[in-house]
Every structure is written in structure tokens, then in C-alpha cells.
Length: 129
Length: 381
Image 1 (tube, rainbow over the protein chains, first blue to last red):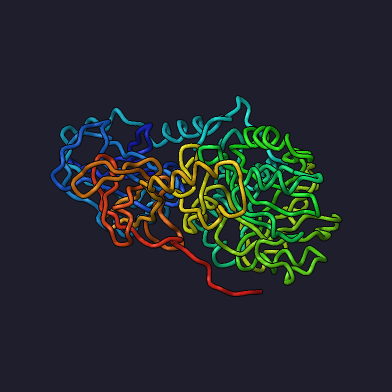
Image 2: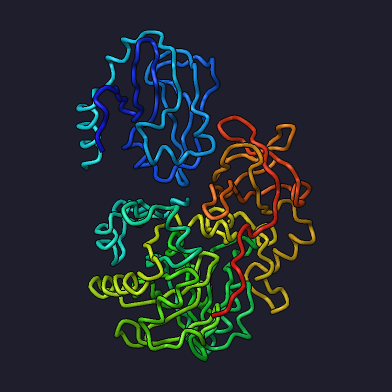
């Protein structure tokens, strides 16, 4: 699976796509793969203030519960409600199945995150033991 | 999950290399390195549905087996288990449990009557050592021998409505003559005298076979089963699907629905408790517990609001007061809803009662629904 080069990534396996002041957030293909069949996604309400590194929601597979961490700080402007009824979209297309859109407090926060190449290396090292 | 026997180096079944070769995701389960699911060929959801609709194959070699044989074998079995073994025919299996004197669970077991004075108890992986010493200790007064056969078998479960068609291709035994919860012996994959039991832990029809434990033989049988089941869409299934399948069928798991602090009445297993058979370990305490009144009971829950109740979550009443806990909970792949088993006080146990389960500090409304959540369609092959 190719990790889009225009996204940034966290070590907790979220992705962030920045366009101007808007950040779009999802979880990575590696995350969906290690979770397995995703059956539940819980997302914050529009207007929620997010702090980088803090929990923004939860994703659950049949077996596991996993927190989603905010890759950057900002205010939630849009939530992908379709995931309430079709959480399996995350398995099918993790890099397309976005979770929230955020009005970023400071778009340059994204620079602290991993590039696609670095994330790929990170995942390979993590899975290589 | 009980962690009492987690060893530094996890134990492996003879099929361990096969699981790895098939791309299984491995986990430590009670000290055993076991497949939880097989993402490349199945994945939990697909595995679960294969068993409900077709056939799936499981490695359950981590289960244990204890043979009790000798002139007083029956008396010994009667003494240490709660169901009545007296009426069993040779070739019959019976679900039962071993109890502590307090009427709580040592383990649940399947009793197999192998011969005149010859019984085999199939026990859980997580309680193997404890069970073996319990049985040894508590049958000492009888003229019989308790023998741990746990390492003698690779135990393979072939489960689902097409399990019978799958296994029939590999054996000379006429499986149509083996009723549910009976067993026979036959040649399987050219191996003589293999124990073939129509048992399982999936709330589905199916078989469990006990083959020699060496790696090449185990692998050969596994792949033969895979090949025989190909036309029915067979998939290898891990512990993940095993858990959701048994949960839909309300089959108890040690350390969850049953334990050393839960008694038979609470667990709702009195169908397998034969108080009238005579004395046995735990009986007196159960009599007292009944006279004192049962205070909590195991119920089935379904989420009304969004949220998946999971093992260990608190159960609240609608005012927010803690009243019980979830023993097992999950998204149910066949039923496509979020279900749980939970202990609640009697007054909250009626079908239709509304309670809440605390999920990430939020009460999520659930209602009590009938169990088993899933019952297989009646059809004899």
C-alpha cells in the first residue's frame, strides 16, 4: 500500500492532509490492517476543540478498541457521518475514508509529523520484530 | 482473559508453523502462541460467517484431555462433575462442569464415555494444569487412574453446516450415524482409530478430531481438511472467530461467564446440573445458595444506543448506579449487532429490561434480550 506523499503521518498511525487552514484526518492503512474488520467509529461533534496528541475519537474492530489521536490542534468543522453506518469503508480505503476536517490552529504543526517515506520506514521497523 | 498460566515462552501446538505459513496473526492466549485470525485468507468476520454458512477449521490443540479409567471411574466422574454421567452410553459426550466445594467453577468440561470404565474429560487451555491436579487430587479415593493426555493430541475442529460433508471425504466412518454430542472412531486421512466427536464451541454443527501430535501428521491432516472443504468455501479460523461464535451461542468461557467466584445458578447452567444424582463436590453449597436466594444472574444484552459493550465494562441502572459487569461483549458478525453477556441483579434480568453499559465514561443504553442470541436452524444430516 502506497502512503500518499502529500499526507503527513503520526507514530500513532493517523494521517493528516493539509490544504490551507484545513486539515483532514484519518487512520492509516497500516492501522486498519492491524485492527482487522472495523465495525465501529466514534467521532467528535462539529465545533469540538482538538489538541494535538489528544484523543479525538475511537475506532473499534471486532476484537480491539483503538483511540484516534489528533495529529494537530484545531476546531472540528466537518465529520464523516457515513462511517457511522459504513465503518468498513476504513478497511476498504483507509486513506480515502477521512474521519474529521479541522480548522487548524497552526498549519505548520504538520511539519512536526512524519513524511510518507519516513512513516513507511517507521511501520516497517515496527512490524519487523 | 485469565493470565494465571502465562509462561515466559509461549507454548506452541504442532500446527504452529502451519498458522504462520498461512499468514495468521498470532497472539498469546493463556500462555499459548495461537492464531487470532488469518487476514490473508479470512479475517475474523469472514471466518465467523464461513462457520455459520459453510465450514471453518480451527486448531484447538491447546485444549486439554484427562482420562479417568478403572473400576470406579464412573463414581470418580460423578464425584467431581455436576452433570449425571450414569446414563451415558459408550460413544456419548455430555457437557458438564467441575465445581469447588463452594459451588463455583473449577472448569467446564465435556465428558466422553470411552468404554465401560473409561471416561475422557476435555478441558480448557487456560485451566489445564489446575484441572489436572484437581482431578488427580479429587479422584484419589477411587479405584481408578487419572491420566493427563493433553499433549497426546492435535485437536482439530471442523465446524459449520458443511463440516460433515468436509470430514466425510476423509474418513471411512459413517458420520451420518454420529449424532450431535456423540463420537466414534475411524480412519481419518489414512490414520487408524481416530477419535471423531460431533462437538464444538461455535453453536453450530461440527466435529472435533483428535490426531497424533507430531508436526508432519498434524500438518497433513490440516491441509487435507482444507482441501476437502474447498468446494464449501472452507477458511481457517482463529481464536477471534471462535470467541464471537461462542458468544452468539451463549457458550460460557472460563474466566468470563464462569469462574471460581461464580456459581452454577448465577451462570444459568442448571440444565447441566443434576442435584438428584447423589452427592458430588459443590452440591451442598449449591443447595444452600439456592435456599438463600440467587442474587445475580447472567443475561444477554443488546446495545440500543451506539456502542460496543466489552469484557469488563460496568453495567449501570438508568440512574447511573453500578449494578453489574459485562463478562463478554462484541460486535456479533452474524447477527450484525452489538451484544454482551453480563451479570446483573435479578430485578434487572427480565427480558426487555433497560440498563446501561458504561463505555468510555458514557452510559450506553442496552436492553436485556433472550439468549442464546443465535440458535442454529434445526436440520439433521
